[in-house]
Amino acid sequence: MLTGSCLCGAVTWRLAETPDHATACNCTACRRYGSLWGYGYENEDLFVDGPSGNYVRGDKELAFHFCNTCGCLTYWRGVEPGPDGRRRMAVNLRLAEPEAVADVKIKHFDGLDTWRTVEREATCVADMWY
Image (cartoon, rainbow, N blue to C red; front, side, top):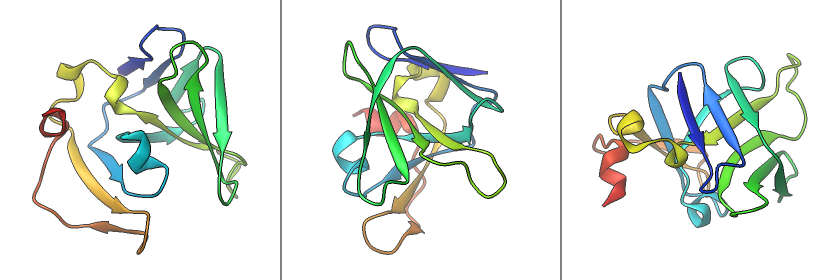
C-alpha cells in the first residue's frame, strides 16, 4: 500500500499498490501544479480522506482537489462516473514519502497538444526532485 498526505496532514490518500509509473502531464493545469499522477478508481484501489476544496476547469470533466488548510494539490477526481459506473481518480505522488516512490518510472503525457504519451529517456520520481 502507498500513502500520501498534504503538508498539514488534513487530507490523506492511499493506493492499494505502488503504481508502475507516474504521469507528468503538460496540460495547462498539470504543468502549473507540478504534480505527478498515480491512478486508480474511487473506493476500489484508491481512497481519500479529509476535507478538500476543488476546482473544476475547462471541459468540466475533472475536479482538482486541494487541502483547505495548507493548499496542497492532493488529487483529481472525475466529475462524473464513467460508462462502467466507476469514478476515475489520480493522486499527487509528490505527497508520498520520497523513498516510497523514488523508483517509480515517469511517463510524459502531452495533454496540451497531442493527447498522447511522449517517449523520453526513462526517468523516475527521484530524478524530478533535483
